[in-house]
Amino acid sequence: MNCLAILLSFTMHLGVQGDYNNIHPHLKCEKNSFIIGTYYNSENEFSYYIGKQYKIDEWEIDTALVTGYDNPIQPMIRFKKNNFYIAPMYEKYYNDTNYGIVIGYEIYCS
Image (cartoon, rainbow, N blue to C red; front, top):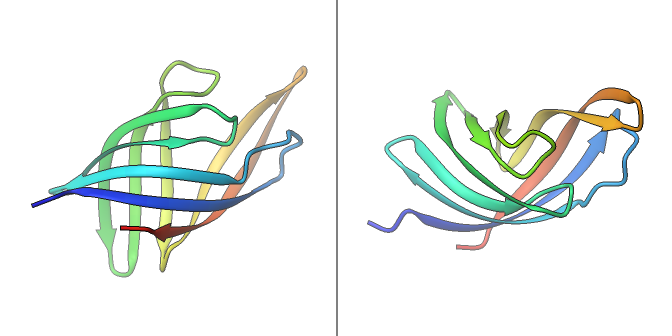
């Protein structure tokens, strides 16, 4: 069984000041609720992740460790329903640390 999915996400970054990429090509493999993949992130870098997906009623909750940001490895959580998702985010903007959210829509291309 092939676990590979090709996806494309469109995002908005709310509550933060930086100028972020809003289009994210994404390759993902899901097998027995474990997930691994790569995507072009909001900071115009490639991120790689490994984690676990939980399904609760109509929701999917992705938890993972991800690369490609300020910290070499950091935790990630994403709540998804009907291809829409929301995830917390933070940024270091000059001397400030800001907290916000990412709202996105993900399209399955395969």
